[in-house]
Length: 84
Image 1 (cartoon, rainbow, N blue to C red):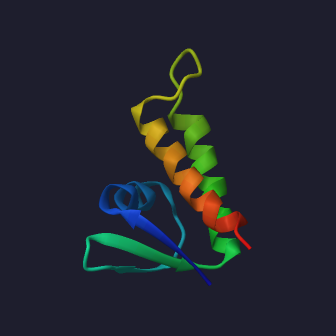
Image 2 (cartoon, helix red, strand yellow):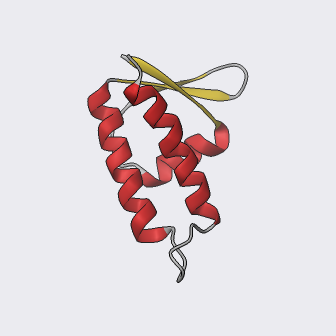
């Protein structure tokens, strides 16, 4: 199992996009810790990538404001997913 730390805004965004079950706990400093294996993180990355492509690009194929936040989530999860 690996741990992913997210702030409140990141966690809320993830919950709005992801349709997976995962274990999480809220820490005293108002961050959330998601505990999952690589299979769950892989599915999260797939769903976030799909959401990014389908909902977060403007007419010029540039990221909109939500897309920037989704991209940050993808980066955070990727770091955990690809660590040894």
